[in-house]
Length: 128
Image 1 (tube, rainbow, N blue to C red):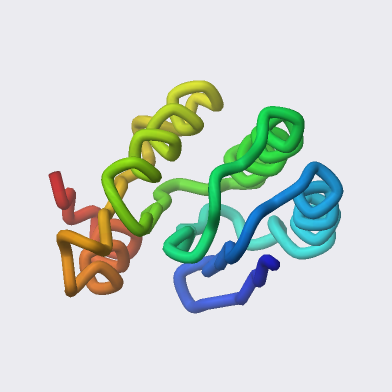
Image 2: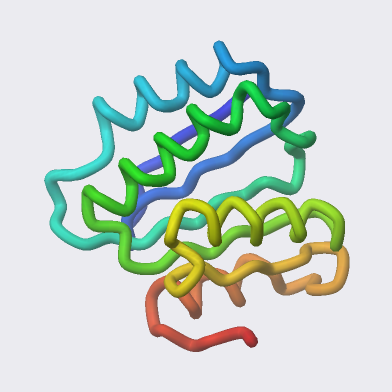
């Protein structure tokens, strides 16, 4: 399941469960309808409840990430559940070219994960 919410800084996207290619295709279709038209924006991506993305879904996931970047995403805070999921998120960011604008927050190590992500997105306060 995914959810895309409009916020004052841009968008908050939540991913939960296991994503097959068809699930990611639905997310990309939703992105095409909603993202953009506001100039630059920030994005908080909550992946704490997400399972790994299988290889056949990753191509579509990369399409969605690139769409956000192309529509004006300036900073993204990616919140993960543990160090293993952080490794996958870092790899995705490097492969899609958003690594320089992304910061990764491991919620298992940072109880204040949401504020850390928002400080990056809204103020440019680098958590690293």
